[in-house]
Length: 124
Image (cartoon, rainbow, N blue to C red):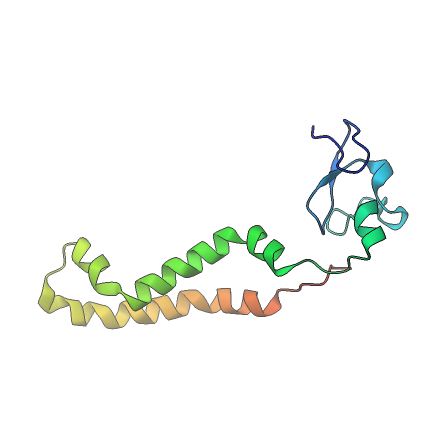
């Protein structure tokens, strides 16, 4: 177990939703002691008046999603090196390119909806 970032206790069993630091149950705000895992707020964030997470925190929490989107984007913009790497001859590339671009567009639709649904404010 990690040490509490507020008081230094060895029993930091929860993590603050806003600052992502480990905290013990005595350093959590009273309204959040009920066990809500998504909105646990430490005393430090409450004193500072933090009500939303930063854009950097959103990026850190969703590194994998950005990596997959970046891979789809790279494959959609520069498909020829990937197709040549797959061993396809040059004359077949144009007949392969159209279904690849359609499939890439279809695969990115759920990620676009997910990015629209993201919230910077805390849930609940």
